[in-house]
Image (cartoon, rainbow, N blue to C red; front, side, top):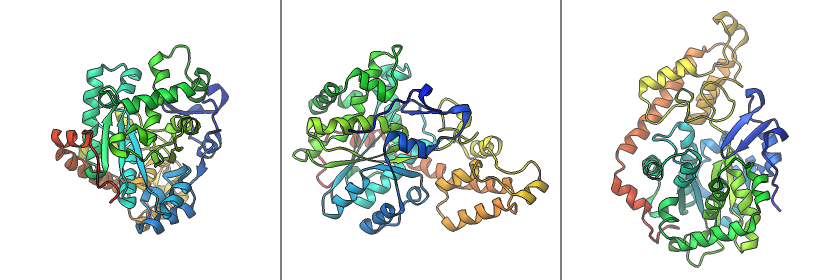
Length: 403
């Protein structure tokens, strides 16, 4: 039985679920406590070294710097892969806004690395129905935002011969009987009390919210995609995601043996912090908390200089004497995500902590790094056409998905 504990705020000093991430008194998320609460495992250096040995590729920056820090059965996935068994990847996006911020890119950039390294197929779910229910968007607007977000996802560089992108309104609503059958099988296994315990639903939530979790769970079962995996019902699934999505897949893993499916494996990331401080994740509802892929170079410069929380001292004299507090400095945090060069990052950390480097110098380097990331993404997205979106979302076999 999977560990399933309530996320109710009164029972803990932090709340982490798919719809809310907060810590008591605006504090930091305690990831060690979260691992213990959710019952997942810490991703250790042994597993990271195995990835390099099995794929012949150096570990992604998100692996070697602990951005992806927890897992469920990732070791089993690697064991099976080493014996010649394949798996497929599943990740997704809830399309609630026109543009993505950098935090939204994290799972897609990492998933692309996994797809390229292991040469495996990928399904990407756009939960336009979820956002219609939670964000009070119209059905039509939710569908439109899903296509717009699909362009940003495609711009990350996924291989069309190994990738199927689908929106729930189009795939489930369009008559995927296999997907619907699996959804009903999961629904039948999860009581209302269990759903409340996992997700924290209350009597004020509409019934659409209570009914939604199986829809996000069943893409982790290959039989939901007969056009891709017919006859491969025991193919394992690996899900790269932020750890706030874990409740969906605790439920899926608990149900899987009862419906004769394999348990999905997960590899889970920490949150990309807001500019104002590491007290959760970036929020699309506050444009000044985030760097968006649509931000201009000027926007990025202004946001970093004005809003990025500094761990530097209150005067140059004190900074030279005491150095910066790297644990709270957002520029250092962001460089840890996006500055590829390990040696340069370590040099900046050392010099800044010692007071030999000033906050303005660190922010200047971060502005350069993020401007390059955003400009590269914007160029790639501009090349994505409506026809390309249609091609990625077409229900079709992928005959070369394992080659």
